[in-house]
Structure formats: C-alpha cells, structure tokens
Length: 354
Image 1 (cartoon, rainbow, N blue to C red):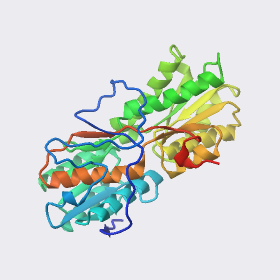
Image 2 (cartoon, rainbow, N blue to C red):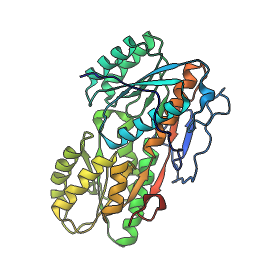
Image 3 (spheres, one colour):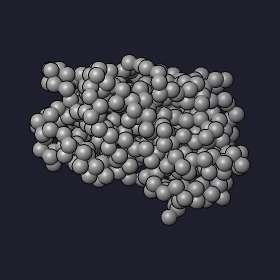
Image 4 (tube, rainbow, N blue to C red):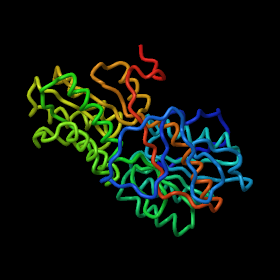
C-alpha cells in the first residue's frame, strides 16, 4: 500500500563524523584498495559546484525558494534504511528549503513503481531512489526520464542513467573479510578456515559484488584455500532466510572447524551468526557489514563478532540531499559517489561497549 509522509523541519543532524566519502567516475569490482580510516569526512565536490561539502549541506544549496523531493525506500523498519532516511530528513530540515515526501515499498517492485507515480502526481521536482530490486529499476528510470525528473539512487540496485551513492561494494566487503581473516589467522594459527558468505543475487550485480569481494578478501589472506571451504548462502536480504540457509550449509562443515561468517548487511550477518550458535560451533568468527544500530549492538554484545565494517548509514542522507539539490540546480554531479567506511571493533570509542 502506498503512503506518503512529508518531512521539512525536525531535529538537527549530526556530521558524517567517521565514514570516508569518495567521489569517483566509475566503480569497478576488479580494482583493489586497502582499508581506509578517517576521523572526519573530507570535502567532496561535484564537478562545477561551489565549495560545498556533500556531507554537510547548507542553505547555500537553496538557489530556489523550495524543492519538493520524492523519496522511495524499501523499508521503514530495517535499521540501515531507517538511519539513512532519518539522516536525509534531518539534512533537509537543516537546509530549510527542501521538502521530502517519503513512500515505502516493503521490497515490492510494482508497489515502488506505483509509489513513484503517486509522488509525481504530488508535484515532486526531484527524486531519491532506495528501491533495491534490480529488475524494477529499468522501469523506474524510464518514468523519471520521461518526466525529466533529476534523481539520485542508493545502491542497493543501480538506476540506469542516474548518479548513485554507494559503497564500492567489491572493495569494502573485501577489506572487511580480510580483517576477519587476519583475526582468524592469528587466533587459530595453522588452521584453514571455512568461509560462509551471505549473498543476495536477487538485488543484482551491485550487491552480488559485495559477496564476490568478501571471497576475494578471504582468498587474499588464505591463498590456495580449498574451493569447498568457500560456501555461498543466498540470504535474499532476509535475516530469517539467512538463518535457515546457513543452518543447512553448516551441516556440511566439521563441528570443530574454524568458520568465518559475513553477509551483505548487518541483519543477514546476524541471522547467519544465530545459525552458527544454534549448531553449537565452538570456533566461529563474525564480521558485520554496514554498521547500523543492530550490527554495532552485536559487536558489543556477541563475543564471536570481530567487529563491523562501518558505513555510517545516517551520513548517507546528507550526501544524497547535496547531490540531489545540486542536480536540481543544474550542477553536474559525479556518476558514482562512494562511502568507503572502515572497520570498528568493541574497542572503538564511539561504540561505548562495556
């Protein structure tokens, strides 16, 4: 069922305090990088823009008296989506001239398309897309182009022909799994672990690249790891499916083996971790991916978690708003803007783990 919620004013929003924001011309799953840590977000400037920091939009973006921006999101309860949505609304409130109209599709592509039509009927002149089912993005792109609506998408699933904010999926997952693999190598010297990786092929190549990067990270730390030690689990982006499929996959793993678990988001990873606990495995390690409230909570409370690759989900909203308003002002923006993130552990100060 389509619904619209309007946001203009609200509480102030925090700075994108920790995650690294990187503007790029293209995103390649074959490139390599090393983990990057930043204590403050560097300025990112789209080509031809004024000296605005994407992660800190200001009233200087208000070249017009008002901006009516549609926002379509796959969930209003999933923690990463909630944090991102809250960051977007708070950023719009701080700028003052931007109105955000939100609709939710609950992982239903036809509903997402219907929501877009509803938003267009409401008179939006900009659009932010957080619909994650790849097979529906082409239709959404055509609707936006035919109505000449400037748009930016969260990857998720790519929106053909429009700029995107993402996370360099291959390399960030690679860096995350490398961190976990190095912990395993130190903790269990001489052991060749199993890697059980959560994948979400239903969401298309941008999300599948995360799983592929995770495998590449494990292989970088354990060159020559047997192929049967790499196990792909289809989570479909649902923690219960992640749990059930992982529970089944672990039946083929020796009980006393070293097992590493990582999926494409925090909740899927949590479902996989619960499966390992249900099996009673003594030697498993988990690295969360995303850094939403659930994932960070697990880092503090579950000793099997080595940490989380932190992407500061609340910080994505200000970046999206900056890009979208620049587009609406006729400014050329990067085709790809990546938020690279870094590894956090229970010793990281801002988590306040006890």
